[in-house]
Amino acid sequence: MDGLREVSAGTTPGCEDCLRAGRTWVHLRACLSCGHVGCCDSSPGQHAHQHARAHGGHHVARSLEPGEDWAWCYTDEVFLRPA
Image (cartoon, rainbow, N blue to C red; front, side, top):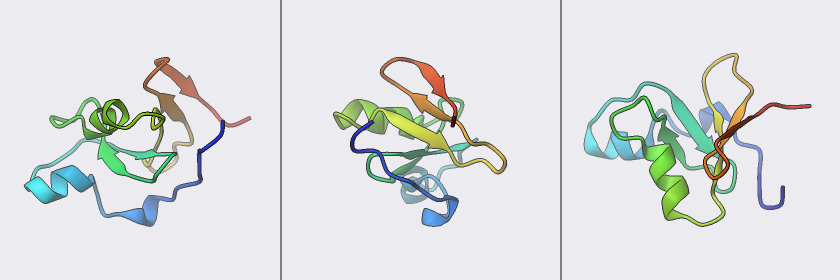
């Protein structure tokens, strides 16, 4: 997949949008196109999904939860696991 990059869990202390608004989140997702860190769909803000909808081509995000190595494609609604 062109345009995807490796992101690490240490890029931000939490959901960038929730931190600005003083809100909380459930789980974190990182955009594999730009590294934006947003909260999951179980969080009130659903900022990772909002980011994917607002930015064309930013449809794949990986989990930043410890021990998880999967990604999610918001366009196709599928889990992606490393080979």
